[in-house]
Amino acid sequence: SRPLRAGMDIVVSITRSSPQPWLAALQKAFPAATVRSWEPGSAPADYAVVWHPPADFLREQTALKVIFPIGAGVDAIVSSPHLAPGTSVVRLSDAGMGVQMAEYVCHYTIGYFRRLHLFRAAASTQTWLPMPMLARKDFHVAVMGLGILGTRVAEALRVFEFPVRGFASSQKSIPGVACFHGPLHGEEFRRFLDGAAVLVNVLPLTPATEGVINKTTLEALMPGAYVINVARGRHVVDEDLLPLLDSGRIGGATLDVFRQEPLPKDHPYWMHPRVTVTPHEAAQTLLDESMVQIVEKLTALQTGATVAGTVDRARSY
Image (cartoon, rainbow, N blue to C red; front, side, top):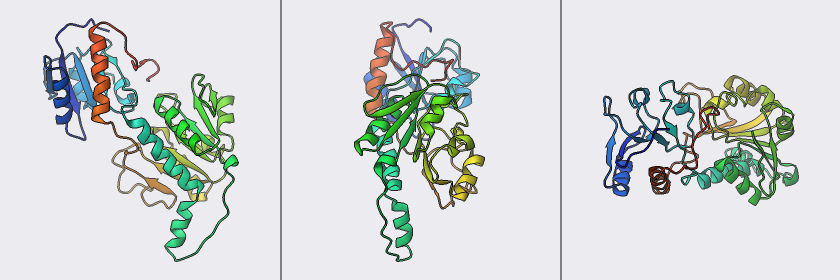
């Protein structure tokens, strides 16, 4: 990456919410720096704090030393043909998202395990519907992706004594979690999926992981299994998931992310009786927690130190 100089010029490009709190927090943390909001035609900057920046941002800002995306995913930035070769992309670690992601996944996992959706449906017709408890020991929850957020999710699920499996591309060790690793669709991946009652996706989006929630993957799960996607919409092959939901082979899905966002009003997920749609809200980046990390990382970069979270552009995460 490019050498650093003492003065800092920080540009902020945040869409879908106001950049003003970030501008104020950065200026307070670095009073000697130039902190400004990006506009088309803006002068080149040294560093950038971004969330869903427009295509023109990367096309114009070719002198950036480091980009800090404040969301969980970096796929849109890393895959952009306009990302300059000398620009590093540095992820934030958790930034308050871990506990939110964990509570979201636990909420829907527990709801499906306790069959609360069936009680709600019965209550709508004033039907008293007692049911026997499912066997917890047979209710395996499979978490795809064991980065910081995926690990937090797996650990939270263990609190409720579910048998939890985890899958990652490289070997991981999490107490109480059966960890599998290797290439997607390899033998370890098949063992990881085999008979799982819930599939949770927390994978990064890469060329290798796109479309991983497909017919083959879904049919390896327990009949009536539940799917929770909190990663990226492009992980799901919608044309494979919908027929399996229609038939009941997949018993239900909670989807927080979609190929097109906002989800088009005519998309079949909206009205599907077995689908819960949430508007990309499983976890929000929190300003205060994020700023602690940005300050630490920028300060370290000014001294020439390496920082955690630097994205391997070849791997896209």
